[in-house]
Length: 304
Image (cartoon, rainbow, N blue to C red; front, side):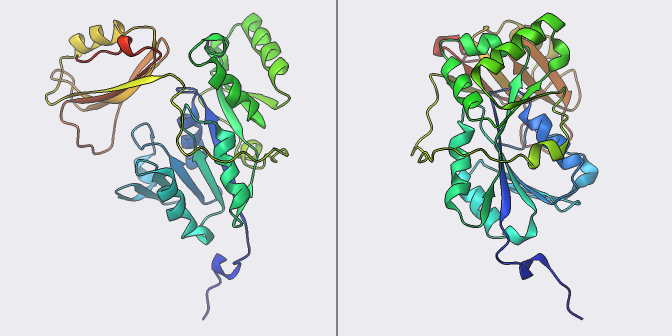
C-alpha cells in the first residue's frame, strides 16, 4: 500500500507571510491565535519562545530551538539566526502549507519579504503589519523611532490596528485619518491579536520594487540591556523597581522568580502598560532575566 504525501508535489510553492510591527504591538498574540486555530500546517519563525503562550496540550515535542505541535505546525526560534531557521524549514518544505515569520519589532518587514521573491520554492504573500492603537500616534512622532514606524507602515499590505478597545471614538477617528494619509493599505481593527486567518494569510502582495537585504540590521537608535539576578527577588521590591522605570523604555520582557510568590512569571512592559503572567514552561532561569529596550542608553538601569 502506497501512502500519498505532499512530497509528490515537488513544484508546489509554499506561501510566505511576514508579520511586521513595532515592539509590543501584539505580533506574538496574533501568532498564538493562528497556532491555536490552525486549519493548516504552519511553519512559524519567531524571535524567541519566551513570549509564546502555546497551550501545553498542543505541544507534541519541544527540542532546543524547535517546538512541534500536535496539529502539524512547527515553531522555530530565530535565536541562532534567521538564515538557519529558514533553512531548517526549507529542508522540510513539503511538510507545511504556509510559512509565517514574526519579524523583529525593529525590522522592516518588506526587506524580509524580499527573500520570497528570490527563493523559487516560496510564494510571496502580502505583509500584514500590527499597530498599537493606543501608542501609534505618539510613536510616529517620536524622533527616535518615528522613521521606523513610518517605514513599517509603508511596507504594509494590511494594517492591523490592535488594542482598538483602548481608544475612544474620537481617538479612533483621528488614528484612522492619520493612517489613511500615510498608506492605501486596508485597515483591520482588532483586540488581543484576534484576526481571522483567512483575512491574514490570503492577503495578496502588491507589486513592490525589489530592495536587497541589508547585511546588518540597524537598531534605529535604540539601546538594549539584559539584567540578570541569580537569586529570586522580593515581589514588592521588584514591583517598585518596575514602576520606577523611565518612560524612555519602550519594551521590556523576561522571566522572574520571587521569594514570596511561587512559580515562574513572565514580565512584560509595552510603553506604560505592564503585565505579569504565569509562565507554564520549563526554564533555566533561577532568579531573573530581563531584556529592556530604550530610546536613550542613560535611561537603562544596570541593576535591580
